[in-house]
Each structure stands twice: as structure tokens, then as C-alpha cells.
Image (cartoon, rainbow, N blue to C red; front, side, top):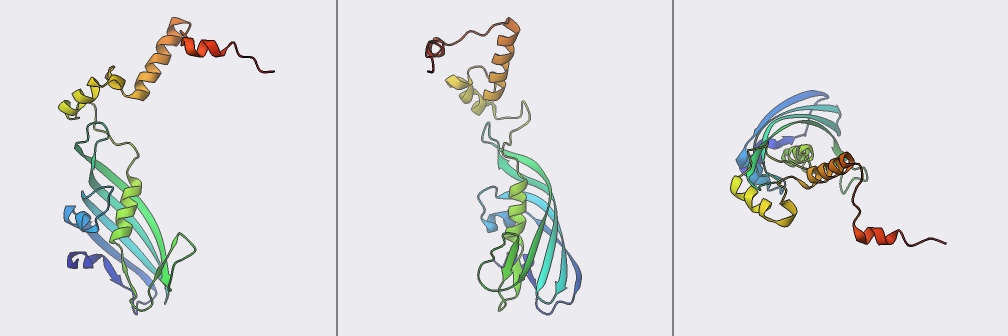
Length: 189
């Protein structure tokens, strides 16, 4: 874990003031962190640390770069640009903080490892749905998906539903499924 030591900041005996750090994170760093959201990337991180008292610290992160995530459509790796920032407050103390926005740092060790926090800021910046641009998905995998019944139209479910609604509206009247039609006969008393 020696390679990760560069993300550790020793907070002992720091004077009040502002300190700036720059980190470059690559595939090797992300693999060592061992997160599940992604394990590859090339990211530049700027950290501004403010020491406001002998035991109180705040960190502002600016993160820019590219991470590799699986495409939700074809499951092949894709590059995803990331540009995000984050904030973290820390102070010396033992145990767990009741405040989710405050990190307690052991008074014995007096060091903070920023690698996991950087990873989490990046993971939070990854959109819920990440897919290749049209035409960039793995064709073999796309063909397998299209061969399944729910993908017969070759469109995503959302696109297919909106196309169905548009065609029904254009035709003037929507054909109702007979099972739903039977429900109209029930009356509430």
C-alpha cells in the first residue's frame, strides 16, 4: 500500500493557513483503492486544505479526468468524462461523528488518507445511466439484446413506450387491452 502513501496528509503541527495539493490518479491507484463502481481511470485532483485551528480542517476538491465504466447497454468498457468538486470537514476526535459531513481523525495518528474520499466524490459524479454514443456499442452484444422479446423493436424501453404513445395519439384513439376494458364494468358503491 506504499504507493497510496502520497494521498496521506500528516496533520501534526500544521499552522493555521491554506495548503494546496495536487494528485494524479491512474488505473493502478483505483485498483488499489478497490472500489466497486469503477477500477480504471486517469484523473487530476486539486485539493485546497484550510487549517482554521489546531484541530479543525476543511478540504475542497476539484476533480477532472476520465474513468472507465461498463456501458449499461452492451456491457463493454467506456470512457466517461468526470468533472466534479467536493468538500470535506475534519477534526481530531475518537469514535464516530454524529454529523455525516464531519470526519473524525484519530488524535494518536493525526493523519488523513484522501484516496477513498476522492474515489467517493468521483463515484457520486458518475451518472446513474451510462451508455455509449449511438453506434459505438459492441454490435455482437447489441444483436443478442435485440433478439430477446423485450428488445424486438431495437429501441430502449423508454423510447419504445414514447413511440407507442405518440403513434396512438396520432391515430386519434388508443386501442385498449381487453383485460383493462373488463375493469370498466366494475362500479364503486
